[in-house]
Every structure is written in C-alpha cells, then in structure tokens.
Image (cartoon, rainbow, N blue to C red; front, side):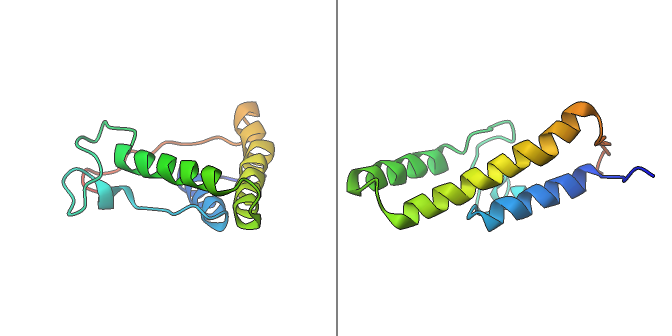
Length: 110
C-alpha cells in the first residue's frame, strides 16, 4: 500500500532537517509586507536583500578572520550533509514519481 505524503509533510520534514543543521526558520507571515516586522516591500520579492547583505558581510568577515576554524567547518559540514541527505533521499523519489505531491489551495488569510 503506497504511503501518502502531503506537501505539508514534506515542508515540515525539510524545515526540521534544516533547523537541525543550524538554519533559522521564520514564518512567512512574520516578515510579510503588511506585518509588524516586514522584510520585503511586496509579496513577490523573493530575495530578502537586507538578510542577504548581512549574510555576505558575515561570510566575508569569517573568511577574513580564518578559514580554518573548527566551528565554521562544523556548521558547514552539517549543512552540506543535510543538503546531501535531501538530494539523496527525497529528490530521487520526487523525480521518479514515487512521491506524489498534492497541492491544496488554502483559504485566503491562512
């Protein structure tokens, strides 16, 4: 009997893996243009430019300090392993059709 996997289950699994690798999850509505803490001017803005600028600054500073710190290598290795796990487990199943994603429309405002 095939296992039913929903888009929500895949999203939750992916978020969990990324959080375990050190990424921070932020609910989209918390940074929406009409929120108390907007990080984009329009919903169509894909890149969060201020976050990107800060990340580039951190990367540049870290590279300038040293490339050889154990902490940087540990975080980077963890993130690489997570992405490899996603690539090796979920992606082939999605491509082969073994996992079917059913898109469900949500009501406005949810």
